Image 1 (cartoon, rainbow, N blue to C red):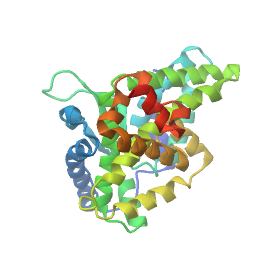
Image 2 (tube, helix red, strand yellow; image 1 turned 60 degrees about the vertical axis):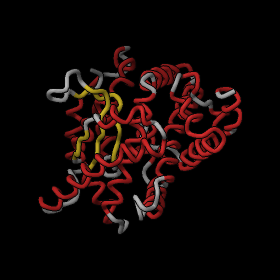
Image 3 (cartoon, rainbow, N blue to C red; image 1 turned 90 degrees about the vertical axis):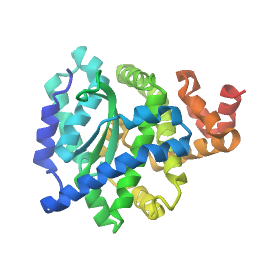
Length: 311
């Protein structure tokens, strides 16, 4: 394995801590609320995306409610496939990669609310073969975010779960997606030596833009009756995205946790345009094959994607 996940755990524990100091009873209540929201979210996402055929599979995904060090350990495991070629080719030592990744994750750890990890392989007792993918919810950060922005924590919990479960539907509907991402990131890392990394990154960012844009679209079409303070949460999230260090932004881009604000907006506009023109049935063609993923140019011109894929 190119990354030692215990290094990330230790570095985050040392540098970022586990989270805010709250009573055990309050921490338990936050965790219970997150699990309740995780139970509700898949049905909401299925309704908004019309990906009903995948609801049962998504509902079976494991949900882990974690503190910051536990998330960092899971994130290190998640990013490991992307770094495999880099370490295997002896360009850098595994220990160096683990330490640098651990420090970068420590910078990010206080800001991550949740993550759908498509690379996890989790065995569930009594349910046969391991299940691919799991939801990670970082309880202290959800509490901090809700408190700092004076938001209803129940709405925030459901907001986070709906957003991350949208990613679960994406990777379930397109089981080839994770392999495409690993392949393209590996190609980008290999291209660094040849000065061609920018071109490779454009393709990766196009994928991330449509994935995050789709999640944004889903969140912004959830009825207000389900998440009454949704607009306030959306505004707070946007403000958070515009802050943060350059190091944290770079690593979040690599892990798929963050994009530039305009890329979220571009992705959402693409999804909205296609859904208005061809309905969810038309947009959901994007999950059928890698050939249906929009190119960077098509993201700016959704009509051209529709002509290529739907005609």
